[in-house]
Image 1: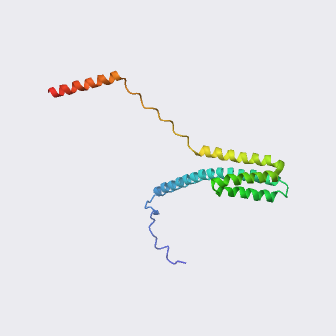
Image 2: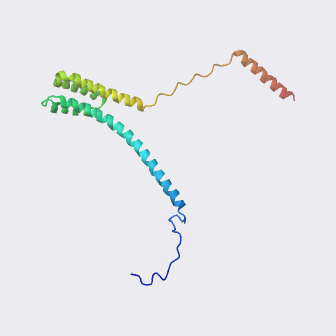
Image 3: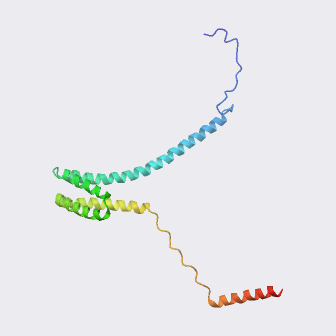
Length: 176
């Protein structure tokens, strides 16, 4: 080890912190501020995660509705149904004129394929559309209140009185 290190004692200075304070009070305040900032960040992140999770949950609910319908179908109808659903999703990319005709045709094919199960398919489809409309309505702010009409003009007698007063003021100022 160190021979003779005991004979040379260094003076004991208070430990200096990175911020320059000797008593550590600034470090504690800085540490508390950092912890508070991290907590606020975590809270904000948590809130945004909940909002995204809620939107994801609705989307998964819609998928779950179609998935449960698909699983309830007989095995031989499932691949055809899934293919028709894929085509139905692709209609979103079509132009408005083509889209309507394609949806009507696909809906007729789905009806023919499902037979009695078509009622359940329409129930699921209506539920999904209602949920989307509700989400859309909640996302759009209500229209601003209608502006009130301008106040009615003053009665004609009042206007004549104002004109007379203005004329008198002009005459008085001209006479001076």
